[in-house]
Length: 112
Length: 115
Image: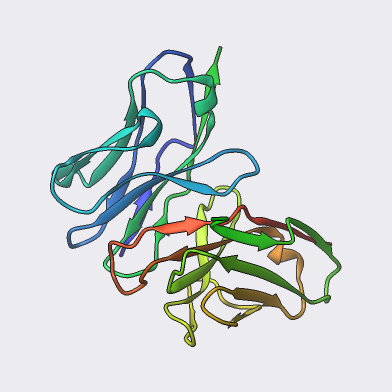
């Protein structure tokens, strides 16, 4: 079955610290993967996407993600978190069609 | 460009009432989608329209109907609202639904409460 798992419901980091949000997927073929961010009361904004090629993908706002096929993972990273990064983050899988499959989300809290 | 717009932003309904959520996009996208977002469940696809003139059920279509009015507009109708439909509803669009590399752009959402 096709699915996306984000094992961390909440993560709290201090401002300036590094961040890694985990995402694991289940899909039998080459996946198309996305990370979206949702600020409170807002819609979803695309941070980055992986379709093929280089497994390290750069996105907006200083985020990057690494695709690891052997681990079925697509973890999101940022070297230094800013208070404005506090939001909910969703990993999503596009399994060769138009039906995006979302993880349940990880809420990021940033300590001053 | 406004991107994807949704109206209304907030709505409170009584059980059994009906209403239509409106969505429009100005990016000349072919495909449009309706999702609902519930705590701890991410977003789930209700209906989608791969191209003008076509609509199909997603993961959770029961209790909803849709209309692809034209290329720009895709509406979601609740014929008889139930408390289980209390949710945040998002509309999205993408350039070409049958092309897997097409990313989706989201509207700001409609927060619906059914009492």
